[in-house]
Length: 163
Image 1 (cartoon, rainbow, N blue to C red):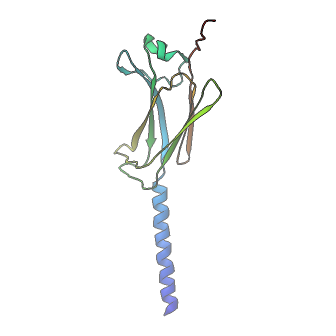
Image 2 (cartoon, helix red, strand yellow):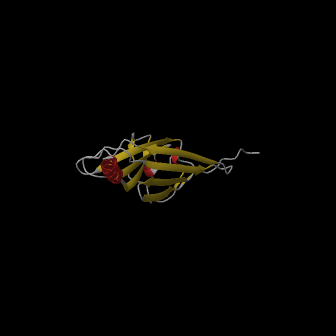
C-alpha cells in the first residue's frame, strides 16, 4: 500500500511539474519592434520615428526635425506573446547607456512585467527620457529568447567661453 501511495504522489508531482513547465512556456514573449520619437517642444507633438535616421546635432537648440527644439525622447517598445494572455513570469529588460563629454557612462536599467496581451497578441511599453538629446543613446532590449540593440546618435556642439 505505501508503494501505491508513493507512486500516486510521484505521478501527481509529475503532473504538477508538467503544468508548471507549460506555464513557463506560455510566458514566452518576443520583441516585435522599437520606435523612437522626439517631443518637439515648439510644435507640441511627437516627431516621426527617428530610429535609423541621421545623427541629430544640437536638438535642444533647434537641431530637431523641422528646426524644432527637443530634449525628451519617447521609446515605444512592442512585444508579442500569446493572444489574450497575461503570462505570470514574462519579463523584458531595457538597458540605456549614454557617455558624457567627460567619458562617464550614464546607465539606466528598466524591467517590465505584468504583460497583458490582447486579441492580437501585442503589447506596447514606453520609456520617456528627459534631457537625453545631447549624448549618443545605446539601447539594449531583452525579452524571452530575443535581443535587440539600437543607437540614437545625438550630439551637441560644445560652446567654449571666449578668452
